[in-house]
Length: 211
Image (cartoon, rainbow, N blue to C red; front, side, top):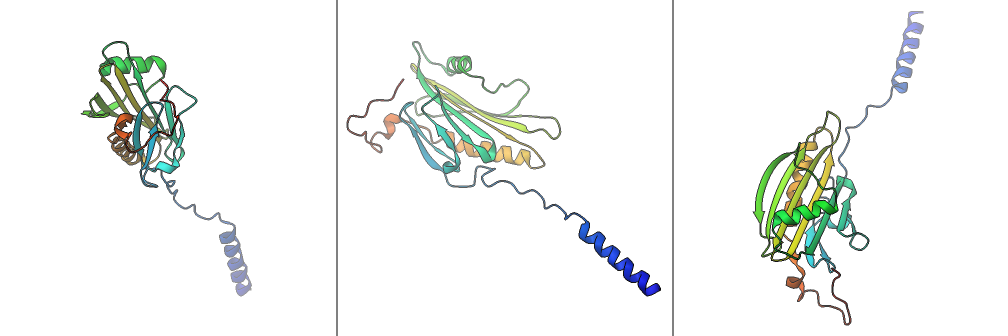
């Protein structure tokens, strides 16, 4: 009888073990979540007259036709990049260029953000451009945001490079820092179209970039 009870208990224990749900594996970050999933790739905009390199370049979805800005999205890192150059009728300071850009689009605000880096960058060459990196805190469990803002002016030309991203979870701060570092590298590769002309000859009959 004792043996039977022991066997029944063993079967019962075995059934319980089989029915128990398997322990979930820890979540793995998506490939390219830190923008290091692939090498940098060159992106050139004839319309805005600039070229630059994007980290994990082949994973970005780029639209340089339908909107008034070049827009690029990187799904794995919840990232978006906006780039534009334009002409002003008066002297284009970086402050004036930023003010005009904010009239056109809703861009990240400094209010409520932790802006932890500000520095001048010589991009495009000859422009007075300032880069700012910031993080937007979020309630527990909600995604935190990060941004890189770069606005520059030269004579009567303006330049804007605006990157935003989101991350949640225990590794969010590390991911945001890595993405912002990668996009700072991207910004530092920006060059005007005139500097690339010898590398990218125009096709016969090709029209100039739209303004």
